[in-house]
Length: 449
Image (cartoon, rainbow, N blue to C red; front, side):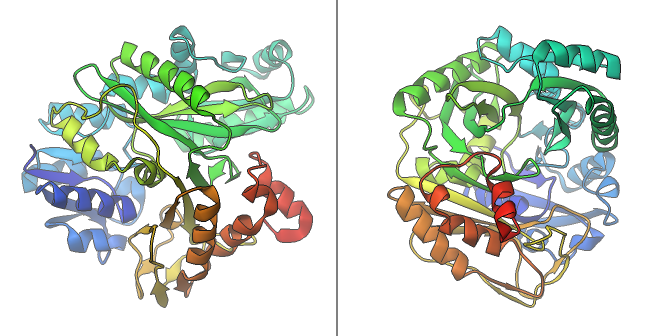
């Protein structure tokens, strides 16, 4: 087992890893930028090292500074959390060459799945259905020709993308030149590579993902699915498990396909296979995230498993403690991402939190690094808390989330709590009738979502 783990991240995910390490009796090292000097992950880690100025490129993305911090403190492993360097094959390779265990998949798996077009081809070859699409297109003419083959509407997508960036919907040939150029420019700015490809656009999709875990001994399991359909600008707003759209037979069939594909490539550690469901409930491979997800607590609530502990134990060489391909799911869980944003305009709302009260009670969990008098800096992602609830069924989980949102007090900044309250009260959401355009329709009805 590891003696000391450095956490190459910040905020609630850094705290989450610290909690897992404390329960495994592993010492921790926090790294922090100058903007995070008074953050809770700095306070609760056994050691802390400042790695640079506030800008991510000078701190949390600074590989040399992070590796130096690990060497100075005598860490023998690094947990990257999510975001920042979590899906960087280069960072994983540097860890290996520095005799540090990277708590995540192997660099070759990260590299394969990091290129969305290559990942689509690999998964198709391994038996997973994919949406009609193209290889990387280099010019407007190539994009137009590919779109004619695929059929409009199409989505132009960054090959190295994620998080909703470098994506544009194109409904006609007339729209292609401007949308193609915009997607390329955004891809280059966000990921350092302008490569884009085309994919058939589903008008009313649902977004469903399977949580997977693989050990270093050839075993892969899935831990059920999460419904991540409620989104804005391709960014997830809330997640739940299980999905109302999957019956036990479909869950078993698709889960087996996912497990079989990942066993064939020797996948290890945590990962999420993301799928798109069309109006006929057909599922298509979309992409794979080779890291722990923001929404992993939803799966923890319905399985009773600690996914971060499992990550650490797998990286230390242990076998998965699960018989068969999956585990049973109990009850229903929902997670709301509470962001520091204006609930009407979605503009970021950095500043000092003047009052903070997290809700509690049966079946309620709050993952956060925020506290009264803490400062939300303008340099990083706007999510400040994850409110997660568990109930015996979906109706109880929704009611529990509604009362927890009402009891969540955050003052001094604007938050997305009012949005979540409207979603919980919506009859279509309660009935499970929604797609990825759910919030857009709300906006047209005057609810400013």
